[in-house]
Amino acid sequence: MGESMVTYSAPAKIYLFGEHAVVYNKHAVAVAVNLRTRVSLRRSDRFIYQTDGDTRYIEGALGIFSSLKKIPGLELRVESDIPIGAGLGSSAAVTVATLGALNEEFDAGLGIEEIARLAFEVERSIQGVASPTDTFVSSVGGCVLVPDLTRVTDHLRCSIVIGDTKVVGYTKKLVKDVKELRSRETEILDLIFDTIDRIAVTGLDALSAGDYTRVGELMNINHGLLDAMGVGTSKLSELVYAARSGGALGAKITGAGGGGCIVAICEEKDVGRVVDAIRGRGGGAIVVDVAREGLRRESED
Ligand code: PMV
Image (tube, rainbow, N blue to C red; front, top):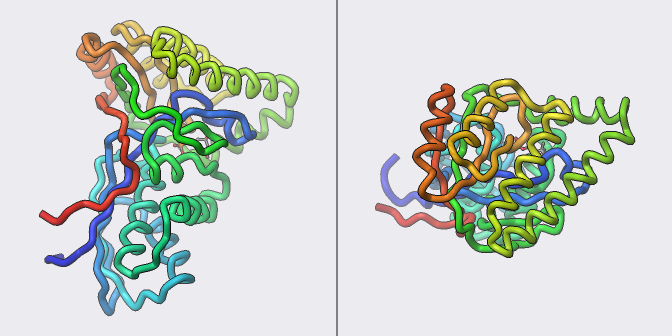
């Protein structure tokens, strides 16, 4: 689309602890990882989008932003490293990056927290249910404690491997399924959520202490509880067990489940074995680092 476009990017995320329970206001720990979505745009007299993904989030971002500034037209291009529908926050990343680029192009003067809040509004209006985790983590980067929405540590001294089942998980349906199970077995589900809350808080202590053996063990327990609430699949568990047998310190579902991805942590020396174990079971394996930067401007090249 030529020159003079403004480009912003925003990262994907994984959950170390706490997905689903976070919908019931329990603690979760999410980490931005260095798979990014880049949105380039410039003013135009028409609206033209180039994307392989869902345009609803772009349109949602434009919709909410036009209540601040009039947008006559736009050429917009999306490039992304983040698999779609994999529970890695691809929709949050495109929403945050679009708002970041619009903010600069139309001089709206929004701060990062404001962008995160608007992006959350967009996600909620499209998904119906959503916690602010994805949009916040994608905006600020690093490791974040939810629902406090505070950055807790800057890096993990362990390796992170994502295992992708390549099956799409439907967050909205899974959140609804958990809600229905809870309406039948309220006391039991609430105990599970409370336990996950404790895991997230304890896990954060373990992270701060650099005790990755304990972090891994807590991830394993968290996985069992996600399975207990019905969001696991045999493929997800297969990848979890493969990662563990490949030497991971811990492995669990990340995100809504029902498909999507697992996340494993391991010592750097074991990355190759963990990756091979996941691939050996037909999963996609991606080695990632913590993305310390959330939304950022990309220079033109
Ligand atoms: O699969 P994802 O990345 O959309 O994560 C869903 C996480 C849930 O806790 C299940 C829902 C939410 O909005 O927090």
